[in-house]
Image (cartoon, rainbow, N blue to C red; front, side, top):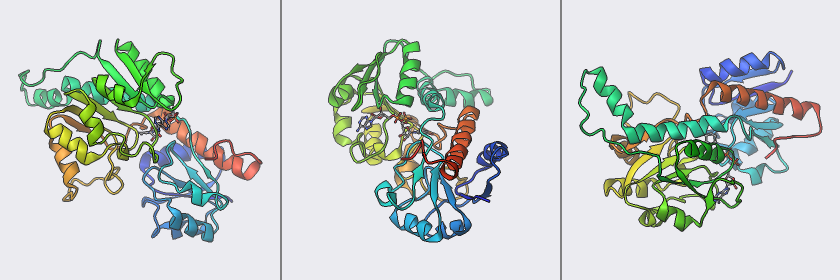
Length: 324
Ligand code: NAD
């Protein structure tokens, strides 16, 4: 029997994995706790660890898993900035789900933008209270605006398709120039010309804090920034300063630099000690969701299908299609 230790498990994970696991018959132990150096021992009876975006797969954790007899780390996500891949090399293979629904994340990015621009979240609260006033709800047309897309891979491409449907002009920056509908420009030019900037690149040494005080200084006054990628692409303190001075007109955040101990949990009864997040959430020009870009039926089905197939492949063939 192949045992899988599944960390940071939520009811929706269990629903989709249990359904598709009927075809495989793995023994999956679902742990609500995140994976870290203190919880790694839970995986000691397992050949496989299944982890997600906010699990800790740093060197000491991988070391513990290796010593416990874990043979495979199966990430059930696309990004792997939380995995020390260099350290894992030659010790434990790491697989991931490179694509499960770029549309889920791209559509969420546009949903956040439309909500913030048209003040839909405010209007919803008002009309529930029979307040039908429109004061303060003025938005702007997306038609004709310039959107700067940083990272034009699967999700960036899907987002560009959506923006084209809105009649927007599309600028892009990527180390690879693959999109035929975007005009690729240098980063500074993108910062200078864009009315809206959307981040769709991975988090790595080059992209860490790609949005910082210097880059914000180069942007148009009133620029909207969308981040559905990884929190640390943005220096949150610089973002907050930009919002406070109204240099930045709006921030749509599905991810946050310090989200690890907060997102995916109900913290409504706790005192949040992160001053930057507290201030960001209080601003009328900010909308925050809890890293939910991936959360569609289609994406959850594909995540479970690819993860289970990755595990099956590891034990039954010599190839590992989705090895990082
Ligand atoms: P992808 O690999 O298809 O595309 C990433 C693109 O970024 C590529 O075109 C690559 O060339 C480009 N890139 C790499 N380094 C760059 C750099 N230094 N500067 C500019 N561009 C660079 O990945 P994807 O599937 O489109 O996913 C993008 C990111 O979205 C993931 O890395 C992940 O962080 C994030 N994501 C978020 C959610 C969510 O729920 N919010 C879900 C899935 C993925």
